[in-house]
Image 1 (cartoon, helix red, strand yellow):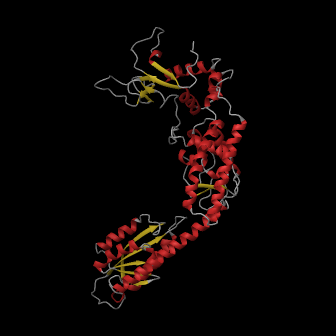
Image 2 (image 1 turned 135 degrees about the horizontal axis):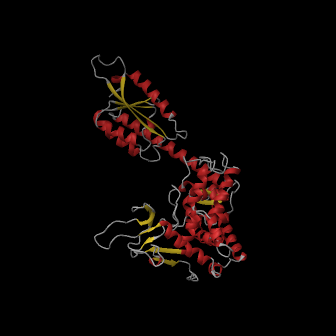
Length: 494
């Protein structure tokens, strides 16, 4: 459709209304208000009025880049509608709002050509894709738009490389624990990070630390509320240790002050990135010692606490607690009695004279710790030099990545060794103390569960019915306890 057909006064009074679609897009909307697309739409609606076109539908892709290659849902819907012949003209603020890829442009021409759909831009005028000259102009504009995007990307990447080489803040959301410019510490938030780091290294669970974050007066800077995932992300940031991370690689020392030491950061990484460490989503606090830890003797599944039976007392029940055609019914035990039985064995053994000896971990000599730290320092200096060379344009990012492979592997080994030397088990608070029961009573449930998980594997087997000789209904013989510590079995209780 030509521009003459669209201009008011040129068509007969009886001619059908020109059906128009408006497409608006903005690449970056940090505030999330859609102000850019709102302005584009208003200009396009004014253009429709001048052309005598009726706007049938508005397609909006907010905060999406055509250059990035990410899917644009509204654009895909528009393309399909154009291919079905639903519009006579598409109005845009500028043609570069539609596409900045030659492949996308060819796909657009293929959809528009059968129905003679024209494209009108507020700033670029008409593109008649039904003619060879119009298609040539569109392709030329698309090529220049692609050039501008690539050139802008090169400038931005060069600027980011230079800032990274200098250890400067690369921008974005305010980092928790730092001021908005990313260069100064927010003392109160930093104190929470320091406290959380100490708690994790002393054996506390990420779950309990997350609960403390939720109960604090501080909110996360990039999420609605604290979760185990959010807290873990904050604690594992390289910036906390004053390290500069750029494109997923530590490239040297940052210009901002550190909140925790490099050794503490390495220890946290080793602990929290351990795949065997579970980071369940925060939810209602656990109320029972062995929930999710005790095992069913029938199927090996974990046991949870629920209410069952006529008396409605809390019981540990296997997750597969159903009547079966074969094998009988999976086990259950009164929660209070089973926890008391396990606790008796835990406290009893930890109170034995040889408990401290069993858990005595040979201290790593200070000289060895210094050797590991020195080697890590050398690796960080080498990474820093690589970052500086990247900033000066002497090497490419691919060359930096290749050189960094071996450094990363060795740094990981050293970090694991330092983490092992610096972190402590929750069991350590209970050995060698005069009154184990009193210390146990002061621990929170998550720490108590950590002790249980480290020391024991508890398996609950089917038990005979009826009273025991002592008059109770609890059959301790049917509860299997396997001590997990490498040093061997403890001194028997009783």
